[in-house]
Length: 415
Image (cartoon, rainbow, N blue to C red; front, side, top):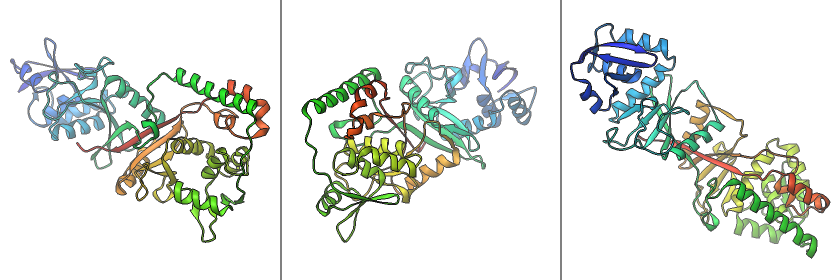
């Protein structure tokens, strides 16, 4: 087909095709609005494959024109061509490709590059199943942006895919989803909320207040607590009976031949909060934060996972903070979890390395961060058994942020 074109911003208007416009639109290319409108990527693909000829210029000249109006045209076109070569129907997000599917209007924006349809489906017949966010390997990606993409996917009822173009112009695809851990107590799903945040926060505040009042009124008898000794950046539990029980039944720490239990700071802090150790929760927190600057972030995630019935161990050998076992599973861990500050910005090689390593050992890569601002005393401190905090508890309840943990899973996507 041979026609004439005009470049209107990032749209290509083609005329003079003598009725062939409908055939192209029927095959998923462009939109017919009294004339054929193509995206830069669609026009380039049709030119390169010889399905369209433009009188005024050749393919090379068209690429130069396209790059002059859209600096990211190069990586976008490489992704578009790769998906078309794989046999998919693809439409640019700004071209109405989301019609027929989900809330959010289907007009792109918000980080969407392309709409991707199920294999064999044609635009207009079925809604798009995925939206594609496009990156070069030299780009950076904020952790907060992953959360925004997940929210966008949920709002539009679609799945989110990251497409990364490397230096050799190969495209790697990653699926992005909110992590759901199997085997949680009460079938609770981590990172997924069924009710509004405000309602949850009010309930949690009430629970904490009730606990405080009960403790103040009843004056609970203090349990016999086990002695521990600090050993640099770890803790030694000296009670051999408790050590053996915690190790064999609950998978804490490392048991020595002398039946002493070596615990990490997060493990010891969690056990202290449970009232099992002689050293106070506050003392552990103060000591641990002096040694590990990111201890509070790691502890919040550890506590959340343990509280939901998962077994959590160090993930150091896999380059992550934690490896996590499903409930009742002891032989092989299922997840690698790395804790990050919410301000973290990934380089794409960093993200790729973490995902590749996790997949190489048959695990799922999950990134975690706290979603609420920290304050001097957090909910964990409020609920601790430390007597020195008793006079301040009620005022702290009103002012402390209730911590939430957000989990996002990133994995390779086969298309």
